[in-house]
Length: 234
Length: 127
Ligand SMILES: [Zn+2]
Image (cartoon, rainbow over all chains, first blue to last red; front, side, top):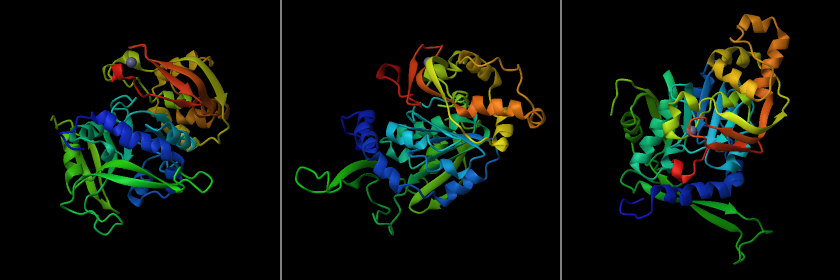
């Protein structure tokens, strides 16, 4: 969102992120079943009994990857949390990424996949990362994913130099039984995204008081593994 | 919501998070249901050291369960005591809070649990 906007970021995100997900929850969920390889191997590498978070867990598609650890997922969308909470032995609660209901220093790991790019100011994106890192214990690791600006071979075709704050349509078929008033059978929702450019995710982790232990690019997304860094006092 | 989950939750209010009074949250007017879930000894053995046992003692007693021992059983004790293992599995993973509230003893805010889903979104004045 542009900085001259008079709408508060909370209200902007409520309208252009949270309400959209709540409405498209079951359709979105039916399209989200294949875990990304890096996330899968991160979760599979954890020792049995490890306890962690899935911040912005959506329908919980990463929860079935490892059943020997315990994950508390959280999401703003009650409809998605209802779906996520069916993945045993894990748990899911409704919560805001910027006000997580977890103690600092308690968790062995965290993942936050395709979440921070929905926050509409740099401060809020860093605050979200800080909130996640704070939950980690010493040595705990957080894997964070965000949509990349550099994805010229994707369907969207964005690349370096493009505007980073974009609205992305989600087209949901309403079905012939529930057509729109004009008779059409599709409904389009617009979701807000901040597209991360190369190096930006790592910089946000450092700005949030963390350090980056590993980072890379996977299928149109930047990812980074961050840890708390007691020596980093921003 | 599982009893185990409650051991990893606290009040979402910033000023509460660092206080010991906010943890654990206290169940109020809670309805419990029991799910049947296959026990996973690998998870149960290894998660014990990760549990805040003193908080679990409080939670279990507030939910009306028999008093837990003052310290967690060792993996060896559990392995040799299938009954204790089943009881812990039932308490931690099978027992669910289906309806009720979770109360923060620091700020008194009550988080609702509906149809097994706890909601930690804060009203505007607490953000
Ligand atoms: Zn509180």
